[in-house]
Image (tube, rainbow, N blue to C red; front, side, top):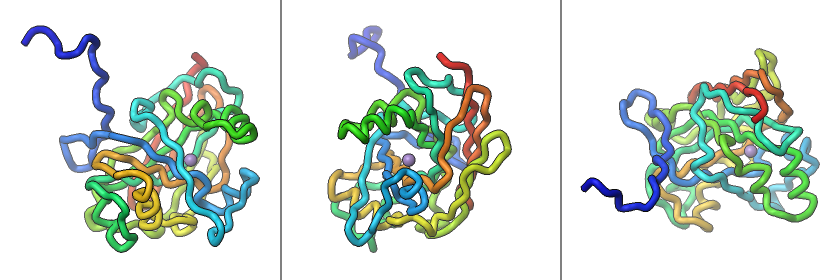
Length: 236
Ligand code: MN
């Protein structure tokens, strides 16, 4: 067939490399968890009491995905562009109303991710009760490493999570500080969505978030998982 089924060329499926494989991980939806480390919740002025609170989520379009190692322009419409270093859970099986005890079966693997944020726009949205999209769901804002298959890692419960800007440590935490651990997140999120293979879940950031400028080099690391890197280019 020489003519396309579509009137426009459809976008390519966003995807990530998979460690040890020539095949790639196709990315479906990107869910992000807000305030999932106590010290970060406090630095944002919104401490979390787990007895009274539930996790909450926002999403990024899969078209915002950027592979680790990229240079991205300093984004438009912000004066306060922040990094957030996060463990990313890659979903490999369908799950709806999943029990915590069954959550491991949904996990394909893990990535080291950056939830890049236009903090000024996010905070305006937060203070005015508006959606966070302008602050969170913008082009090239979801950065991720290759996906490491779950293999012997199982359900990650601990491990250092760290971020440096130009070689200086800015964030240092441990996955054992997650307010809602991975099985709790999958059980909760699957009350609201039918989780599908290809979904990514950014699990939240430890304390120490901050701004970057053109020319800065971000490197992050999640123990057992790997590294993520991003260079901030000139403003567009
Ligand atoms: Mn985040």
